[in-house]
Amino acid sequence: MIEVNKENYDREIVQSRIPVIIDFWAEWCGPCRMMGPVFEELGSEYEGRLKFVKINTEESPEIAGRFEIHGIPCLVLVKNGKEIDRIVGFAPASIMRDKIENILSKI
Image 1: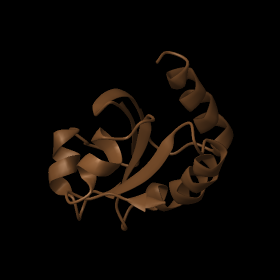
Image 2: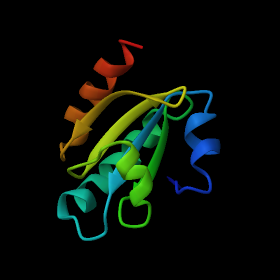
Image 3: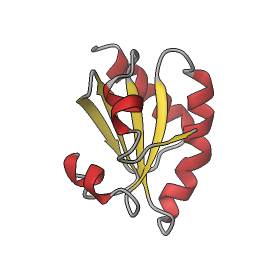
Image 4: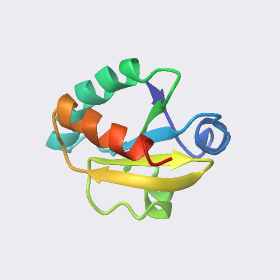
């Protein structure tokens, strides 16, 4: 899982050849910790189709601010550096998969 910060943001997200899904999270957030294994499982399933990265909102508040993140966990789907859609809150893998497929079908 790629941890993104201001040093590698452009390389990992803006310049990505495939869409990117960002998991905005924080260490103190219980639902974020629950989302971690789901995000990793989905990352394996979508390898090559969708890049999965994580951004710690405590360590990279400027990026969280740029995306106007107000609640976590928050998954933001980005293509060509632009936000396409977002999913806020925890959900099990089956529901997250359905939401991701629905978003991907529109781009």
